[in-house]
Amino acid sequence: MGLKYLIDTNTAIEYLNNTLPEPTALLIEQTEAQISIITRMEMLA
Image (tube, rainbow, N blue to C red; front, side, top):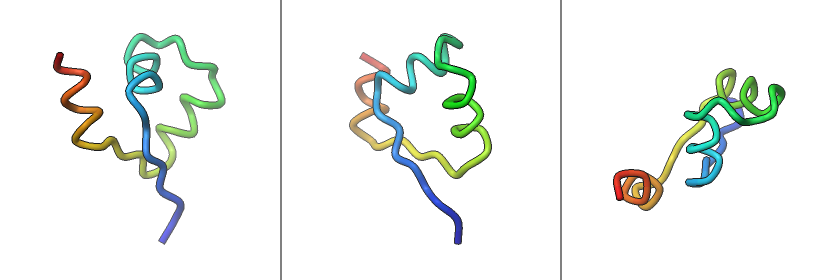
């Protein structure tokens, strides 16, 4: 079982806008990144 990361709203938005620093974006893509239901709701608002 590898590392899992919980992504917050700001990080998710920056990732989707392609404005995260390259190492952070690669970390999200190469690991099992998760978002909470609260983050999902905030992104839909």
